[in-house]
Length: 188
Image 1 (cartoon, rainbow, N blue to C red):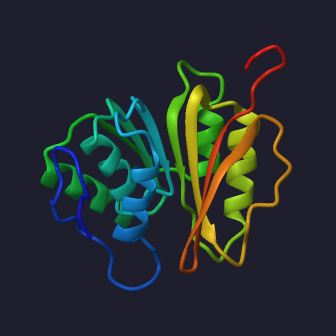
Image 2 (image 1 turned 90 degrees about the vertical axis):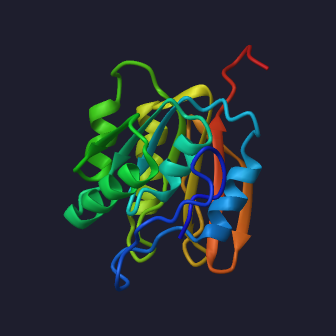
């Protein structure tokens, strides 16, 4: 696993032994960041279910000003710290808590996020619960993007009020959704 591009491009990242945490593959991560705008206007990012931190570190490497890494696993928190140090990245906050608690914590507080990354374990209901919680909480800035990753066996079927799917890609067993805030009445 490595950082794909930006100031830390090519840097190797620590990962996990075993299958308890499934990091986003380099191929999928590269594809996701190639779909996002090249000038990377995403200044404030939250990486929910951060795992190794690879997605958030990719965002920092490409110019994000701040990334909040959220994971409740102590091993994940240690690996995120190790990877941030190895890359010399400092503009990060690591929260050892579950994603739904983090969403509630940030709801209604300060500025929203320009990029929200959602990548929970595939074999749980957390994908739908988290996407719906982000939709209700209004954490995404008006020009922001949520990237949500799931298994092809668990496609997004939630009825979202504030977000809409603007793109959907499949990479092997992985489905990646790109969601943006719905335009309000009178907005174009």
